[in-house]
Image 1 (tube, rainbow, N blue to C red):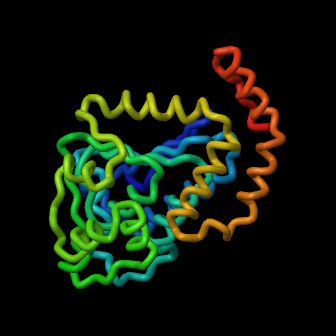
Image 2: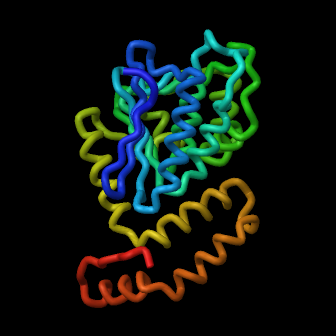
Length: 249
């Protein structure tokens, strides 16, 4: 047990938080490890899906409050921003409570699968902490300004049903169904055409940030896909009523 663990198997990468005895609170060393893991995954073109999960009863209790104010090589906001802009499609598998900064790590993911018994809250105002701007922007873009104010300004606890209702969870399942739901969603994503999958993920995030025209590479990707073998294969498979065999080319 200790710093987050990265495992890669074929097209799937998994980062596991491994401090269950401390509710998976993140230390400065953990932030460095997470940033390194995300960078490693970004450099591996074979990875299409990145899962973020945790050991123990709690998904993550955010940053270790005892270390607030301590110098950090990598900031919490940098890790959350890196997770949002990660090349693969990302999903958080939330098996337990998610608190503080960990709520933003989950929001930075493209999908959030939560078990029915979990809860969340954001205690920044109660701690006297002004949250970092990119995290508040994610709250507003994903959940809307009213839900963001409710969570940031009141430190209210929400149960899993309410988390689903406000859009924090994209999937709400019984605890025993979480692994199978993750496998099903991952399998579906891995079966998509890689260039279209990753290109649209990136562009949708830019639209959510109000920056749809800032990334010229997205437009280049759209043009490349329009001439790709995958598009030809996808069209042929659709007409022939068979499963497509994509190559990412």
